[in-house]
Image 1 (cartoon, rainbow, N blue to C red):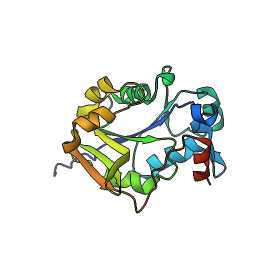
Image 2 (image 1 turned 30 degrees about the vertical axis):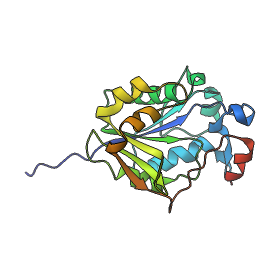
Image 3 (image 1 turned 180 degrees about the vertical axis):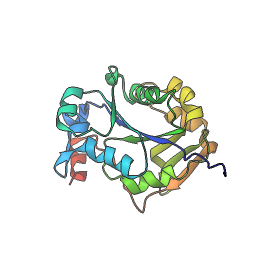
Image 4 (image 1 turned 30 degrees about the horizontal axis):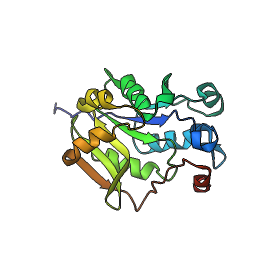
Length: 201
């Protein structure tokens, strides 16, 4: 019998812990988007883009998010240090995958509703090995989602501090990143301020 190669397991990691400080303290995960909490849309984008399992990292108002959003198909990790910034949530998300059979983690931010399954699928398709580093690009500029091969997780987690997330790591390994142009299928605006809420339909 021919040896069939195992299909790589690319887990989705959704960072949804933010407290929405500049939104008057409204947790971003619970912002309303087309009648449902934003976190549901982002989790669906990961799943429909071919990621599985999908891990959601919650923080601010985690109990309320769990009560209001349907995350039944996701694994949920609550980051007790969410107020330290995105770095701690990235550590929590990668930490939840350590030792699992996942070959890579595809990281998406909850506050980018313009990024859907098509962009996720494109970045996911850039996976080549457990050392892969890939990111969506918008007119040549690196953005989200970002794919981290499992061999890189420990180093990324070690350097994830404050609100930087993996930024320093990605800067240091710029030459290793496969950029995947997604500007034709996604928009990479963030929802940080009340003015940005216009991006939510």
